[in-house]
Length: 334
Image (cartoon, rainbow, N blue to C red):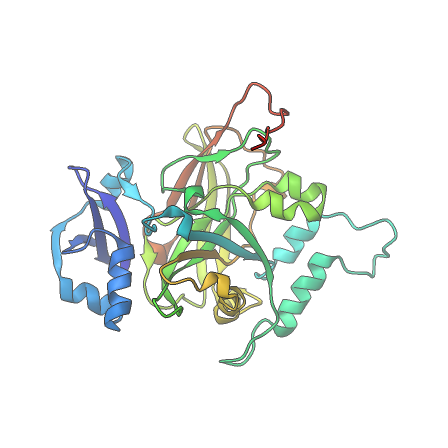
């Protein structure tokens, strides 16, 4: 089952569920957040809760998307209580892409590994522990909160000081923390973990800065488990024409970590088990147009799709223009 959120013709927020091609409004609930919270309190699976509520009118999701009425598939009533985070070097092949962006220090011999390659090797050796056990921790980063979320179809906005504005096609886990601090996985969604790869390549210690950009996820949430093998396509459209396209792979068969291990190393921090908070945690990728030398331009449209996730995730690139991008932010004294 796939879940999404739209605004109807009257501007009301509605939850939409579908199996196959038929999509219907879920009765008696106006947000996936409320739907998931009610299911947690009742101790029910989300699919059972939806079946109990029942279905209303049919929805043409593709038309709603074209009309700009598709919303992020989950939000928090207070967007500062939605956390955007992610992990890197988790996919087979991602080490090669990342290593291409980081030059070896002059004093290193060819036989020595970069930090990226060492981290990737740690994942290969210890990222898939036995069930119920913790494995090696992955690279981890913070992207922002709900104010950084771009809806499907809405622009991903690069700040004026950005040196690059590149896509990262990923799968994200979507979570809601229960009243007792237990994290519950709502499902999985496509995500564009939008980043500044030029800044990151300038110095790996700029990774934290390079990730502080908006992100998009959705349009739909896949309930249940993530398929072991996810095959998708990532492309860039310019003026309607495809200027770059490449397949991407995800799912545990194509990863050096289990989903459970990545979840453990995120939620082991009490900070991320605050009751009622929403988490969108991106699991990494091995496919970047930047590695192929692509330089994107305002108006380009990023498109990410994979069959299990329903509608593709599309977002145009937009840049912020300011009179002086080098002007300092002034802090006032109280």
